[in-house]
Image (tube, rainbow, N blue to C red; front, side, top):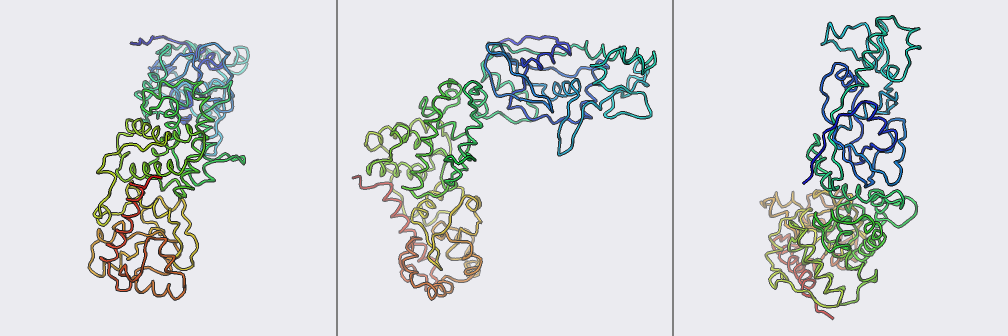
Length: 544
């Protein structure tokens, strides 16, 4: 159990801590967003002796990512070996006070805001009228004012030439009230980082809970080794310097949480929260190049062997974790024929059984054991009933672009490298249009509007077997609400290779699939059989 320490700190003590680099704002805090009006109200409250809340400070020897500058002032580095004090609660207040004391300039919404302008109206007798606001955002030309910046940093000799004796008395009183104010502070000394982050989450009035990635980023930040996990993740997505990155591979929608879990799976075989929080900083830094290469190898495999061209098609981002584990331990080498069959079996089994729809933390650890088997060239064990689909699993499946089963089938469609109906060019599949189920590239072979006119319900029209991947030109210009027999006849006259092209959409024979008859039931039945056969061949491959 930990016990916080209640302390009272004076104004100067707080800001000496900031200026020496001892007191810091952790990077996971939100940016400084207080207005000058809020800052003026804060100064007004201090002068009047009102409570302004408590600062919660975490003291630790761990160096975390922290704010490097406040306004136009760069903050110094702390000396090595000394403790750091991170502000967990009170960032806006302490930053406001520092901004006023230093006369800082901020850029907010493209406007330059100077905190030297906040001033005190010396004409107001706060003792006689305690409700009056004596601190103003800007100088009032009709009143006698002194900026708070000048009050905190000026001298009596300078003021004596400018202000009356009564004003000088008030200036001295206000300065003493500001610099002598007892700021209520709670010091959490040597709390573990996960406890400190939990405290921050609970007291954060914005309600934004810290993610595990943010915590791990804070914990593994290292100036000496020039390591910042958040920066490394951004470079992984988009290196912006000619290096290999995921954006170039169209896999740039992989979230930071998945990348972190790839790290954890490699280091400790688990992605549970408690295990991630135990990861050692130096272990993470040492492992990063290996895990990064493992992610690249995984993406290369998905693009070449499974022919999944974009990350948005992945049924689950979590599938990357065991696959990355495989490629790290396979030393980056592409799998053998047998390993490839087993990896594809695992991939489609996990997707078609909606494995990661819940409880991913525990399931990844179990799946890593399956990957260990595949690394040894052995077939993992699966429940027998989960390795064979039935025709009803296809014919009655409602199409949802975000559902894992449907995405697995879309991966199958992508593997066939679908060609454009009208010119046989490869259909361009990219992340941008895959984000929405109503994308023009998801084509209902029997258009929904056509089926509605013929008495079919929306759920019947939107079955998975009615979906093909086409270019948006075809949807917008050729098909619209026309019957398949109508628009396909027109395309057939333009494209003599149409029969072979349709095979890339798992439509073997236009007549046999009932297209020339506009027979929707026959089309769904035949195409479902074709899809079923392809999926079952991956779930139960003939292992070489």
